[in-house]
Image (cartoon, rainbow, N blue to C red; front, side):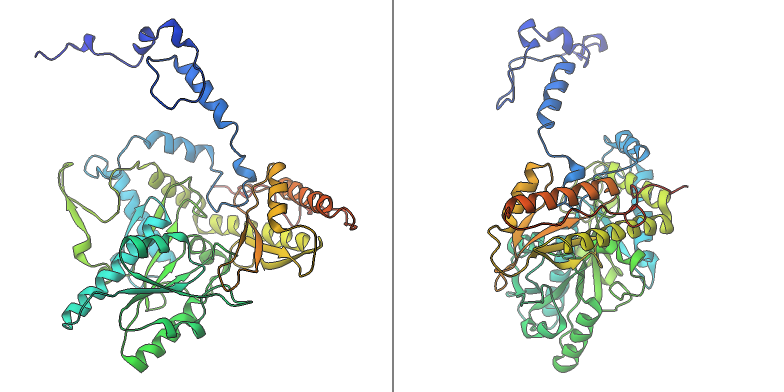
Length: 471
């Protein structure tokens, strides 16, 4: 069969000539392919109309994920959306940007030898965390086989507050999860409760720098010290993985004296989300190992069928290089001081909101944004005639997504509302939120007197977190 001439090949613009008049009207959301093509402007408008019914991302107080980026970063993402990150031979500059980002993060996280750090970008912290877990499991298997011992019952120790990706990891990769339960007043992993869950089959301990439940940091250094004592007593060396999905892009700028990263010899690997406080739209994550020993070579694949040879250690393969380019842009754009400035503004806003929420009865704070720029609050003890779930529902009716949820057992009697402050959460939005929260609470308890909402002063709650930064 002869190859068709170029003139015979249908271009995208030729689709307009294939569109019959009947297709000029689309009936609405479709569950099967339409019988014919439709004008692009019409389809664009239909899809936009449907998307308009979704929530406003700026008023989504549940997500840690980036909802604002500069126009220049958006443009770079659009420019590189079609470039496949897996095709490293064809797009060597994007590959080089990824490697530079890994080295930047290695230095930011105090790797003893940043040039020896092994790392990669991922689709998000969930994938990055699973890669960290896989490396822990493989290292444990290799060590056990070298000792002539079985590898049938690996376990992973972590707090009950871990993100769901760790529950997925344990399920998907056949590792027994050992969850250290919460206790009243202690809502994350601490060293005093840890070692009772460890044994010779423990592949590692997961610590969380920024709990999704309340924004708190787990005491990574104290946990490492507890494991040092456990090794001295038992001879069992247990490495630590730090799930820094949010905190690993906050603590270096706001808490420079905090010991949590590769300064601690027991920390073998760290993951973070570039699409959270790394200021990149979803989805982008990063996984780093302190050196080659922490990432076994047999987990890294050499790929040669895209032209040239390149290493690959990810759960997926093809994905756009746009997110890596955007991360490289944000690192160059803001630099250390710029990223610190953004983080300071976010935490300042979180503190101001916490103070105003504390002044609205019957709320009390669980956390106040002193670690992650996020805070959790609940109803004070007593009968109020409504629940945090009622508050969440009423706030949703006003356009706010303010999540309410219950802590895991044995703290299931603790139900909270959580608010995340991100870049772009302005003083005006913060004041609007406080006004709505006060009004909603007054309506839910109409017989009680409520104070008038307090306006957040601009001097305390800054203008958009991107304001005032210059290159």
